[in-house]
Length: 149
Image (cartoon, rainbow, N blue to C red):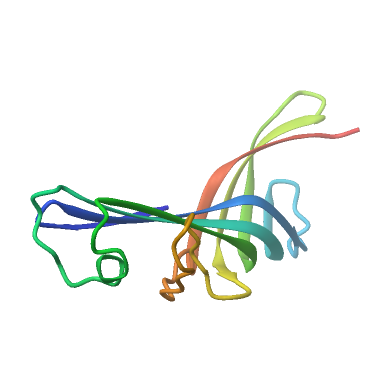
């Protein structure tokens, strides 16, 4: 997930991703084709923040610009443990004849939050905590491939 804002040849970008995620849930329907389940889990979150300006750009009033006014490019990163919870839905699209393999479409809606506020770190710069909220609400769609033994 990436956010971007720009003004007068200056760009501020933020991005967020889960590097590793573990969820557990319970299927309430117990149906062969459909599953509906609440889930909860933990993840390793990473957030990135960058500021770029052209040498001829005039200054804008921004927390990144105010922290590092003499730099044309600044990149900071934050990593930490987060948690997520929500509701998931699975639908088995295809089975083989023996019903030992199936392709499943899934959709999950929920929240994904850090345990602590993100603190951005850069090489020789002071740590910065702007209270940016990223990934609060997430929708996830995809496919699963399952075998029965």
